[in-house]
Length: 130
Image 1 (cartoon, one colour):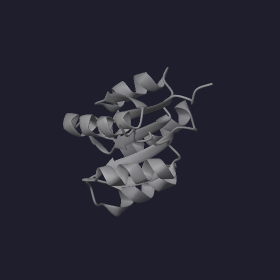
Image 2: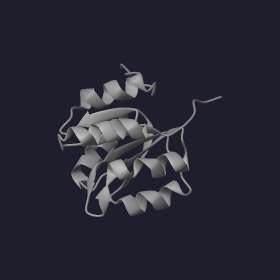
Image 3: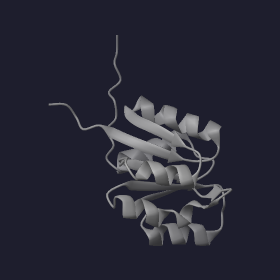
Image 4: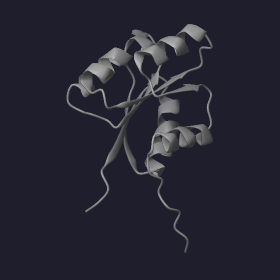
């Protein structure tokens, strides 16, 4: 019997960041979907249940921090990692109050993403040596 499939949704309007983050997740064998708007994310959440969501805050159509409740309504088991470059304390406070699991300040490193995933018990892929 194999390990359960781990999936991620990246909700970020910065295409480059989404691709970089997806590469980190895919290296851990986490199947990843990148979406660029909150509206698109809401559609996907109506029929997909990712294991983890990386959620940006600033979008042309609204704030990610105000979208957290929609994720929770979709499936309360989804792990949520909020990401933002905005240093306003109220964003972090509201995100925590809404029930996120981790808060990442942009820019962040691969190591920071790996540490968060480790804390959330996402498996690491063993390094194969030849």
